[in-house]
Length: 142
Image 1 (cartoon, rainbow, N blue to C red):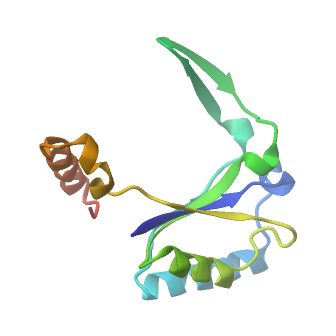
Image 2: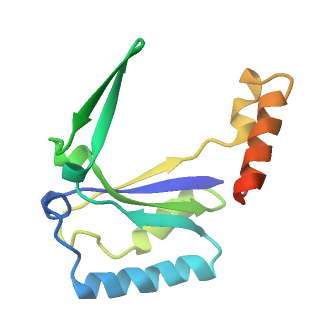
């Protein structure tokens, strides 16, 4: 099962400050462990919200809101996408992670929906087949 691991932003990540060399070295070693274990599917750091935007939907209307965004603790600074056997395994991997902020920080673990989860909304299986075709075209695992 797939899990998205979300690294919460802090004042340093929102300032655009790059991580210290020691942290980058520790993260590279950690990512190498994830790759060797066959867990890591993807992972990226994100630029500060000052370079981002949000699009708010209200019926047919769309409103673009430029960053930066307040409430730093609610923002995401980076992510990993993992394929693990259970939520507990994802938690164990996160416990082994170097502290991304070096001080108080928080990591959020969220399970990613799979095609099977949507079966009640797709009784004919037509939508699932379309999803599998698109994933095959992009080289993604189901």
